Length: 276
Ligand code: C2E
Ligand code: CA
Ligand code: CA
Ligand code: CA
Image (cartoon, rainbow, N blue to C red; front, side):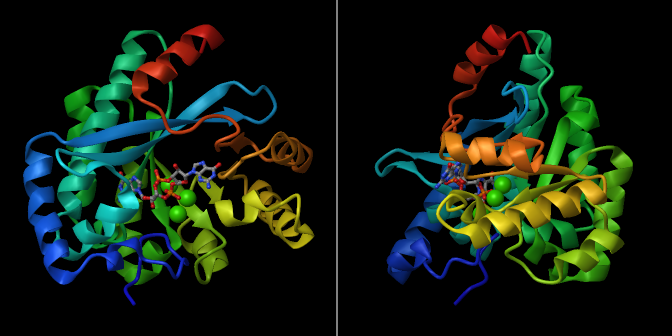
């Protein structure tokens, strides 16, 4: 089995395809990126106390001409295997920064998070790519958060540490995605402190049924607060989960109960109505 981005899940949707199908999809992906078929949706995050939007996560989709709208679970693993992932990252980064700029021009200052694959952290040129994109779009680095999974951090600790330091120096924010599903996370918090922890949705989704999950969420929230990090819960599907997160003191929440990932224009409407 392959190491999946951010995954503990044993199910690998890319395995559903035969080898030839995978190859076809890979070559189609290269063309699709060139033709502008990657679409970025935005899933808002709310401040748990005020329930107002306080950020958004950029989530990529592939508008395939024949197969319809494809989920990242289908093509991100393929992109990682074929080396196309860097093209995907640059494309999503570009679209997200352009969107941050557009929102700023409308008077909405909304931080946006972009998912960064493991291998970008062992790529010494990556911080320069991010810097150039920020400058090109005229976006303040503090408005960009890079979400990185723990597996990315252990892939090559030394090189990852150097890249992370360069990114921090740029002024972008670092978030550890899917926190709690990787390995030796606590040591990373000491050696390469991020700005934010994102609690994996597997813990958040079943909080109300499973008191162990609630204990884990509570422990991560406390850990984050003691280390003075922001803490975000993803996979918030119910009102009761949102309330529990409020009781636990979690800062931000993201999930279907708040909103599905939506086109930018839909989020713009909400920002206007909320006076953000
Ligand atoms: P992730 O980074 O953990 O993103 C959160 C996923 O959870 C998203 O799935 C989102 O739609 C879904 N989600 C949000 N709220 C809920 C909820 O309340 N309940 C449930 N069950 N799910 C929820 P999505 O958009 O299908 O993305 C899947 C994964 O694909 C992401 O997981 C991320 O690892 C990867 N991905 C997405 N966009 C990108 C990208 O631009 N670059 C890279 N490298 N990976 C990406
Ligand atoms: Ca995940
Ligand atoms: Ca993420
Ligand atoms: Ca996640």
